[in-house]
Length: 151
Ligand SMILES: [Zn+2]
Figure (cartoon, protein in one colour):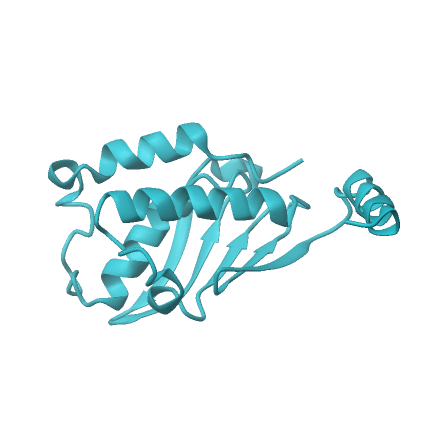
């Protein structure tokens, strides 16, 4: 890294809270209204990917294929806690909306994978198998370790 680039990076980091950001990370588009940095979003995504691989939900090396074109939005809605909204139709995942902490990312990535792989038919409780599969514990572990995606 040359010193000019380093200086620009430091200035950008100092001004990091300005406005929404659009990040393209491992095939995902992550739009954040909250002004969080793409570096923090990337750290969270890599953390989620490690857990997805460890649990056998998404095989290593297939992440970009499984989630191709998925749009993730982190909304600045502090009143909704850590909940999330997924937009699903049969076999399709149009997008994921997360409230401002972004902590529901791992949770919604599980749903998105299962919907795209037709593992959960319409009308079936998409959480029914989570306890036995260990997903509840993994989700809690992720929420405890993920960076908060707002200033
Ligand atoms: Zn859920």
